[in-house]
Length: 67
Image 1 (cartoon, one colour):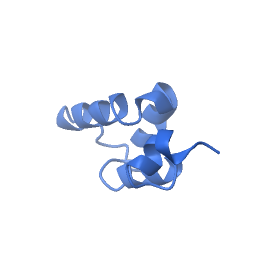
Image 2: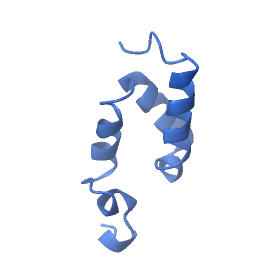
Image 3: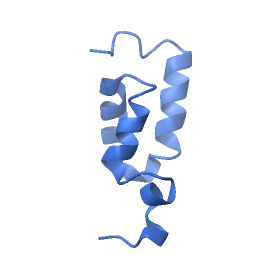
């Protein structure tokens, strides 16, 4: 198990990656979070994933993914 000093999820107040992704699903469509997190991987969870979700939402590209 990773040391909490090097674990970005616990360092940011989450239990683990699943807990973090679930928190994003409160603001963005679940399907979008799942798809983009799979494509981008964990290294982009706190950077590229959030940026892409915001950008796609602003462009209206997440509409219809709520299902």
